[in-house]
Length: 114
Image (cartoon, rainbow, N blue to C red; front, top):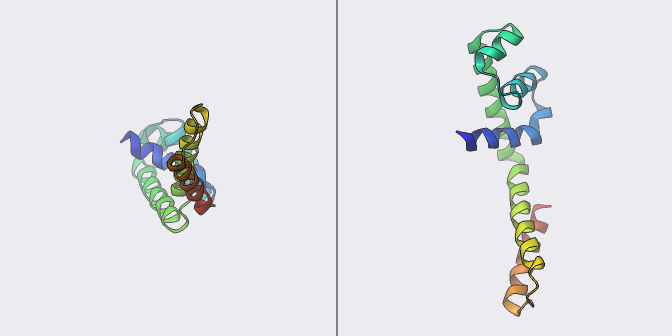
């Protein structure tokens, strides 16, 4: 469940502005302020089911945006590859030919995401 929450939060960071103002408001209350469905419903004076429905539609839309645009996937690839490059470049050992190839491949993966 935590992994899903983290993923939805990251998707919201990338695509949240594409949602309706109401969906954005509900997502912020639920995911960023950690309010329950009932608390969100009380704050917005709508039903708990209404909050749930808004969240479900928003999550579905966010996933559809990711499926089409792939920004979160690209971000994660870039993050993994830059972490790899940082670790290797902070290591003071000389870089051999095989390692040089690995570093070049990491740079190419980053370039592919841009």
